[in-house]
Amino acid sequence: MSATQEKSGSPSSNAQTGIFFTKQPILDKKRRIWGYELLGAELREGIFNVFSQQESSASLASTAYLGLQGAMERGKKVAVAFDAKSILDGAPYALPPGHGVLRVLAGAARQPEVLESLQDMRQQGYLVSIDLDPGSVDQGLCAQADILVQDFASARVNGLAEQAAQTKTQLLVRGVQSIEQFEKARDMGFTLYQGGFFKEPEPMPGRKLSSSHVSRINLFQLMESEDPDFKKLAAVIGPDVSISFRLLSYLNSPFFGLSRKIQSIDQAIALLGWNKLKTWLRAVIIADMAGQEEVPQELAALSLQRARFFELLSTEYDWWGFQPNTLFLVGIFSLLDVILGMQMKDLAEKLPLDPRLKAALCRDAKSEYLPLFNLLSAFEDGDWESLETQTRQLGLELEQVKAFHAQARDWSEAFFSQPNQAQ
Image (cartoon, rainbow, N blue to C red; front, side):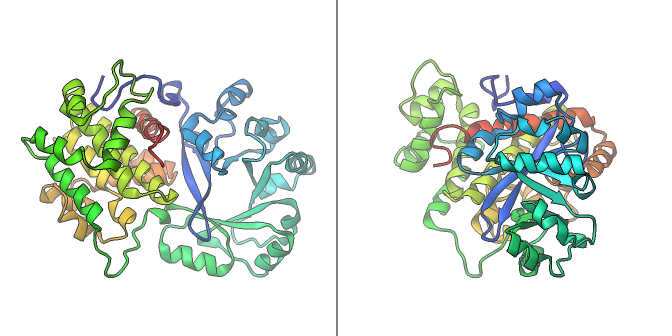
């Protein structure tokens, strides 16, 4: 058992079943999370054939996968792509009505029997999302769909926005990769946005670290020293109500499975050992720095997922001598600039990392760590073709790497599903 894995009952463990999919947030005009789409690597366009009919009811409907139960309890939608056959077979009923969004290509949606089934499903509380053909502005579909989807690269509205407003149809744009693209799509009349833009930093001029953030970074520096002073650490953490409460609540949660209740930081160090405790303390600090807003919390969860993925990858592959503990730090700091709204080059100078790792966080084109970030982007953007190419070029086993990513996702979701972690 590794230092970052306690109980084996993490939410899905689907990495061991041969099933692989990931999720991508969908945001609204105010850059709040509206819902998530599940993306399946096996199909490239969705996960409608990943489960058998029986597995769908047991797995997809329960949505223990990817921590989506908590998201739905917060009113978020879950979008999944289905083909014509799956719709006619009733596969969408694996999703819960009121939360399920059925994504279908325009060609399938025009088939009379499919359209009839989709309209029946709409009556039962499902939303229907139709992908328009590239460059299409098919206004006739407005009455048949709750959401019309275009890719940013070929996005056109030409009267579609006005028609959509009349029929209360939302317009979703996929493939939005930058803040500039988000703003352009919003000006065009789109109301929902999907893509990697939410991970792009939007530095606020003149913004400086708050005293709270400074104290957290100082705590990281104490933690990452070669010979940490445990008494000093306990003295710093103990009076910090937010950090100590979060950490102790987590360590005493059912997930961690300890037989004795931990009542102090000193006791936690003595009972667990420093290396094991340090992992959870890092996670708690990042979650605390993200605050209570949902997008920063999403970024914090993604940071933990990246950290765990890097750690698992470097444990299995002795790749260029990268150390698991070091790569865990790179992952956990990788979105700090987005979370805090500051330039990474300014933040990196304050982090307890050597110059090579700081260069990696700043995405230096010469950084030896850059291929790992490119690998992450392929996962997070659902770019399966790029993922296959990169794993081959890096000498990695695709199925093993996918399993690591699923394990990392489950580990991060388990952390944020615990009481007080997202409060």
